[in-house]
Image (cartoon, rainbow, N blue to C red; front, top):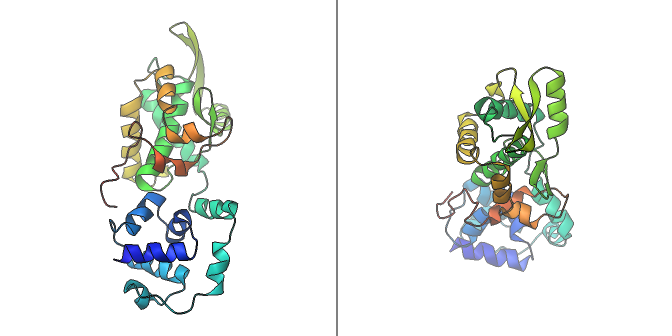
Length: 261
């Protein structure tokens, strides 16, 4: 089977699954399915793997090993772990702050007035919108940076984005109490510009996260985020790794890995 052949070539060249997954543009779990013959390669993916292995494409798809292996492949196989990590991350787009604003406005227009939805809950809604989308579709929605702190994932860009939006009169901040605890709330002044979203799939995803999690109070949603693998494996005050969503437990995963991609 081709999956076994690919596994043999990878081990021979001492390449990691993460490295090959990044080369063909899929997640590591998807690549594992290929090696286990649970998912077929596309023509494009097969050509990329043949190039990495230094093989003629026709030989590769027949599972026939080529005689010579190019020097450049051997050089790649000796790259440091940090080099491979950087290559793995190259398929993650840059953050989209304009989309960040519109997604925030949409959240506020839907649930911003709910008594439980203060700043802490908004942080977690943004986090799960971003990380759940990445797990389900292997693409970024906003691409914000989230750091680990005691209260759960915190979007680094939030403060500067909100300050800019308040200055422009797009939102207002309200300080009040929720069960005698101080709470900072934000309310929208203008409607969100949903043309900033790429497609209807993104809007459906946002609606799903809001419906699933917006009834939780700050403590409940923070506790839930503490059970999520990206938060658990991150170091204090360090960014959470989007790739870690592929190692989620059944408690927080949103993707059915039994289904072939």
